Every structure is written in C-alpha cells, then in structure tokens.
Figure 1 (cartoon, rainbow, N blue to C red):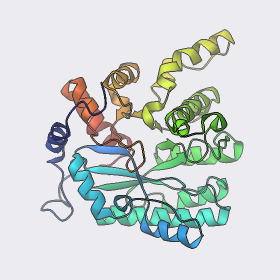
Figure 2: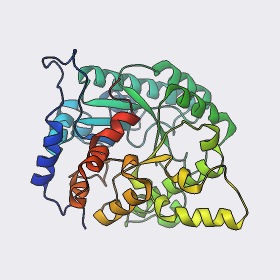
Figure 3: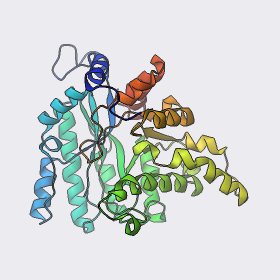
Figure 4: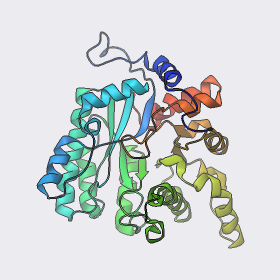
Length: 344
C-alpha cells in the first residue's frame, strides 16, 4: 500500500488524539506532573541557524529550508503532522568532512544549539550528540562535555565516513563504551558517500534509495559479526530507514555464518532484535514484515524531516495496519519514550 494511502486528515486526527495529552511549556502543572507524550519522531533532521552561519563563514554554504532552521516554523509543521517530539540530528553535510579542530568546533555549536532548543521547548525537542568522528579522541571529549545536559538523549553517528569504515576501528571503540555507560542509544544515518556510490550515481537518485538502505545493512551485519553487541550487551543501536535491507536478508547472513561454521554466542534472531528501527518503509506491507520480524517493541515513528525522502503523514502506515492498541502505542510513543528516556 502506498505511503499516502491514508489521508492526511485521518493521519492528523489519529496523531492529534495521541498528541492532545502532552503538556506544553509553561502550561499549568508542567513542573509538578510527569511528562506525557504523544507521537515521537525518532528520525528528524535540522540545521541550527548557528551551524548554517558557520558553514557560510567556512565558504561551504548549505542549501536548506526555513522549517529546518526556524524552530517556530518547525513546531507548526509538527503540529500539522500530529507529532509532539522531534529527536533532532544534524542533516548532511554534517561535520565529518572538516579538519578535526573545525569539526570539533561545529559539533560544539550544534550540540549547544540542541540544548538551547530543548530548554526553550522541553516537551518538543530532544537531540542526538553531534561529534567529529574523524578524530575519535575529540569525539569522546565532546560526548563527555554534553553528557547529562538537558535534552541530550542519544549519540548520532554516520554509518560510514566517506564510504569507508570507521566504526569498527580500535580507536573508535571508547565511544561505544562511553555511550553504553551513559545509557545513550546510538542512532545511525548515512551521511556523505555511500558504499558502491560509483555504480549508483545518476539522476535516478540510487545513491539514496539503494545506497542508504545498504549502509544500514552493512552496519547491522558488522555490529553482529564484529562481536561489538556481545562486548557491549546493554548498548542500544537505532537503524533509520526501517533498517534498510537488513531485516529482509538477516536469514541469508545467518545461513552464511552457519556455512562458514562461525558460531555466535546467542541465536541470530536475538541480534536482530538488539536493534531498533524506524517505520520508514514506504509501504504497509513492508512495515508489517518489519513488525512481524522484530516485534512492535522495536519499531518507532520516523519522518526523515526535512530530507528529500521525508514522510508527510508519519502515522499513515501504522494506521493502515490496524494494529492492536498496545502495538500502536508502542510504535507511536512508548518505545521512543523508553529508549531515549524522555521521561527523565
């Protein structure tokens, strides 16, 4: 079923029903009662104004849209979509292209802007830590600087650096250890070049529609086969774009390991469920497959705002599946609140 099979009006009505219970900043009782949440979007991008200005000063101006910079315009868009919370992560070109010192400075600007956004709208914005992955020592310093600051709820990482691995190099492992200790999930998104880009280039946009999903697939497979999920048993990992092709080809990966007589400490299905996934699958049938494969407790709403492939009706596919109320509540709200500790 196409993503727009459920009308915008119905999607907004259903999303709005869930969103009606949240407490807005400054409302009566906002400080004395626990936070209550509506729809949480775990996959939303932004370009804070200070980052846009810094990129212009670096003679690398970026193209963006007003809603991606202006928080008030973003809030209006979120309200139209029936979304209460955005988990903000920096959109391309991010910062891994820069020399380490410049990348570290850009990360500080982005993270401080995210903290300020949360403080201005504490029930609407949370964020993932931006970090200069090109310099793991500086990345760890930045993670420690913002750890525990208001609104910081996860660590945002590219799936690769210029199409090459950096995640599973020894010098990056302290990031995994620190994130696990802090209880911050890792959220992954392709940024910049992707694996096989030379064969995907062209007007068909295959670098995104094909390359991005396979970046997630490679990342998931490497987390399993590298032993990192066993070494860091409480580390949480979020794969955007529905996990790419990974949920679909997981049995093939498992079969290949068996044929090579490679034994894992746990059943392969346990590793598949170690990941969390957004619901951006673009069809109800695909989303049904994902839920059946990993469980409703591992799937969350995403929009990919404000990228080219973003979703206009965040809850449409979930609504089309007519899930049980408990499963629907998990995907729209509960999983993200628990994973990102939004109640804290």
